[in-house]
Length: 432
Image (cartoon, rainbow, N blue to C red; front, side, top):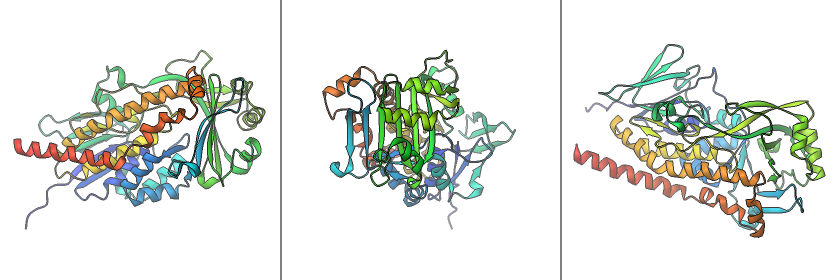
């Protein structure tokens, strides 16, 4: 009887949404021995809810029924539409652009889900012996002869693997290994915009914002564009919660390396001065009850020259951290997981897995870096930049900025990657 080839060892560093969606997809491939390592004492997510847009919903379909079910069980609320409105100027309340699935005919637009709930559901089916908390990665070494990767953790332990996938977020240790510490793109960059958010019970939010703007029977995501400031609200947790977010350019002497700050209630009020009365009242009630609110700066990554180095690669925020203006950070991670799991599901050896990583880099880098740049540019518009006037003169044109993101043929994207992999493997086998 022929002996089975050794399983391919896959290690994922980072237990957020990117790593969780990937390991869940890798479990169905028996030739892969996948494990996930998280620096914190438990697997958890924090921060704002995320939008899972049409392209990402298709990626979830291709990841498998368990991933789709995880989104549903996490209480995701499908938005009927999105609406962008002017908060200041000659005609406050003017709609810059909107989409309504009742008229567009495409009901898959975006679903809003709480990060923590989605992560919990994605990991619910992952065996405990594949999950390793309290494992903060400090260093990576590779064997020049075998290409074996050794992960060194701050607790003094090590883990050896054939393939290392860095899903370790915007502060990624794996990114620095791939690019080098001196590469300017190895570290994130501060955009100088802060954001604060609150989650409020549905009834309380409706009382503050208005029953027309917050309506579970007709759920819309609303975005309000000011002069250097922005407000968004949407629904999540099966409609039990409303997320309310404000963002503004920093007018203080903030430092370029700061990640968090406290924003005074007066600063928040100044950011929305002159806005429609109902919004000013809502912001006062929801965000100004305390003297200060915790806020965080928005950061992103400059384009990396590569996502892969030999048997090591990066995905999710470790590869392409982005600002949230086009709601695509989580979606890019799900696309990454779908492509990586599809490619790795086809390989039979560690050497073939390295080829798969090269294909992943080729098919994913251009798309994801285009989205990061587009999100930066969109943020300038949503903070009241001069381009707003251009879009006002061309009604219905603003949402075209999302078309290359939402309208990706995700299944074809996967199939193209698989064709490229098979061609590369055939070439490798012919020359070996």
